[in-house]
Image 1 (cartoon, helix red, strand yellow):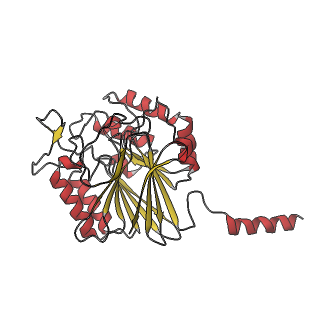
Image 2 (cartoon, rainbow, N blue to C red):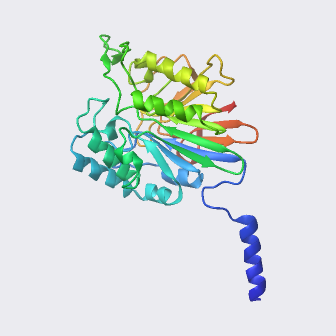
Image 3 (cartoon, rainbow, N blue to C red):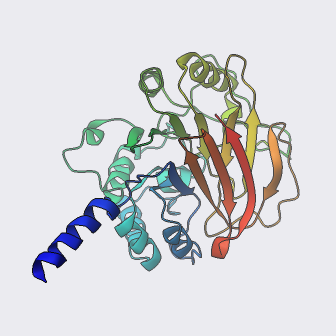
Length: 337
């Protein structure tokens, strides 16, 4: 009987078991979201865990701190770690991501923030970066993650749109907060991060490359924070993506307290560039009444939500979904790469 049980267990292990979050089928599932107040209820952690994503990406505003008091910032991050649903997800699913302004430390903040170096270390502590990690001596939180499966490879490029970002220019129009900064030296990513990103894209052998930007990339007409406030930087990233010939490039974003899909055809690129905005997790722009976005596909979702991206390596199709509570699909988009 013992021999039979041993043989049976061996067969089951051989045929049926696989490392957690290392899929052996043709799909890879990404879940992501932004704008999360640790003191407010987040209705999605159980749904996200039930969906069994292969990775969770924070898209920024992990917490709302808005402070230059580093100990207060650390305490607010610590509060997020005590959230039961998040702790359950963290125990089962790899967690990666970036910051935005409220967890960076100042609303709409950029390179001028006085304690950004200290804030960076608190962010890395929260994300579990080892004390001897190279990121500890790097300016900015940008990094990359590679996920290999038997069917294909996914690269996730995490951008830092705060640490190096040049000054925003106020708009005289009372209906708009900012207008484009056309200064030749104005930047979103900074010189070092731009060089890093170019190298990552040019050398990528991944089947799909996901770029996590905390602020929207394609939607640039609304007058709030967006890459569109730095038109030369938008052009630079578009050209870099096209010239790199990287496969399956898409942009993920947050910040806006709304969720939407944007799509743009770039000359020389065999598929359209999609910017999937997912925001917010605990609070959203319920009073949203409309804003221009020439690249929008479908409608704006102004209720609380998170996003999922299901990548199918075999047929090169991606299923984008804006998700509500209890697994309700609020809006979807499919794209072949």
